[in-house]
Structures are given as structure tokens and as C-alpha cells.
Image 1: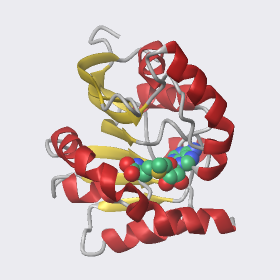
Image 2: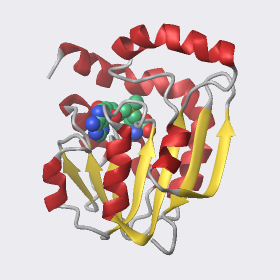
Image 3: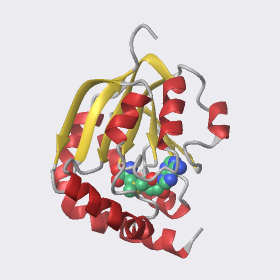
Image 4: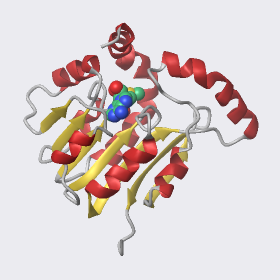
Length: 205
Ligand SMILES: C[S@@+](CC[C@H](N)C(=O)[O-])C[C@H]1O[C@@H](n2cnc3c(N)ncnc32)[C@H](O)[C@@H]1O
């Protein structure tokens, strides 16, 4: 565990406080109707736990021990959350998540950080039931060329400051490259551009 991981976990909620006023409604909209077996990817300090309905079985996958410690405090009194101290592309997760067994995968502010997001999305295509949903709320690359160039310039420093977070990923395109189709999708907050939505695999696949 690095010293910086500890610092990132300690200050994460405080740093996000202002943003969360905007994101709260989105999280609620995206998460409060989920059912069954849900994988929460990189759940950090556990901010999403308050939105999951009580009957949902949450499999919370988080590689950072300081984040996990904070999430466990938020999960106190909730018996429906199981923690996995692993990265989402860790092969050993296949022993826990069987093919076509998962009702929803939740990614909020995490595909910007995972080392290989396309591999993660490909794992989701295997684990999700045919009716399963991929839930997304991510910041992504800017739309204007000039802003993209600024993001590309800042990104190396940002990655250090943000524990591997990339400012400029084209997560909106990657989701579709992995084979998902939108049931609903939205671009919002055009200073740091966000993308959210609910996705499914093609029903004949
Ligand atoms: C910016 S935080 C987002 C936390 C939370 N999902 C939210 O919505 O606020 C990114 C999280 O992804 C986690 N993470 C980093 N690499 C990961 C990986 N390979 N698999 C799963 N989670 C990862 C980090 O430890 C961190 O907790």
C-alpha cells in the first residue's frame, strides 16, 4: 500500500463534495432500481452504497486497502455487500462471477482509472446475464479539439495526482467497442465532460 493511496482515500470524499451535489441525482437515478446480483467496480469509499436497494446483492471490487477500509465503515449494518480486495481484471474473480450470472455492473468514475478498461468491459460481457445492465457515470475526453489538446497536455500530471485517473479517455466509444448498446445515454457538465447511461448487450448475442 502506498502512502499516496492513503492520502487519496483520506481526502477523496472531501475533494468530491462540490461535484457530488451535481452527481447525486444521477447516481440515484442510475442505481435505485437495480435488482439481483450487482458488481460495483472500484467503489472507492462506498459512496454508491446509499443508493442500492436493500434486496440487491452487491459484490464490491476495490484494489485499494485504504479505500476499502473507508467503504467498510459506510457498509456497517448492511449485510448485502461482499468485498473483494482485487482489481477488476484480476483473473481470480472468474471463480466468483460465473458466466451470465450478474444482473448489473456499476462503473462510476472508475473506467478513467482502471489500467485496461477495454479488458474490464470484455469481462462484463461474459459475466452479465443476457438481460443484464451496464451502468455508467464517467468523466471522458473533451469534445472540442483545443480542449482535447489541453487535456492531453495535463494528463500525465493529473494521473499522478489522481491515483492513475486519466482525464482524456474515450470511454463512451470503448463501451460501444466492447459490444454494448445504450438503453439511455447522456453527456453532461461540459467543463469536465461527463457521460452516463444504461447499456445492454444486443439481445440476439
Ligand atoms: C475515482 S475513484 C471512484 C470511486 C467511486 N466509484 C465513486 O463513484 O466515487 C476510482 C476507484 O477505482 C479504484 N480502482 C483503481 N484501479 C482499479 C481496478 N483495476 N479495478 C477496480 N477498481 C480500481 C481506485 O482504487 C478507486 O477507489
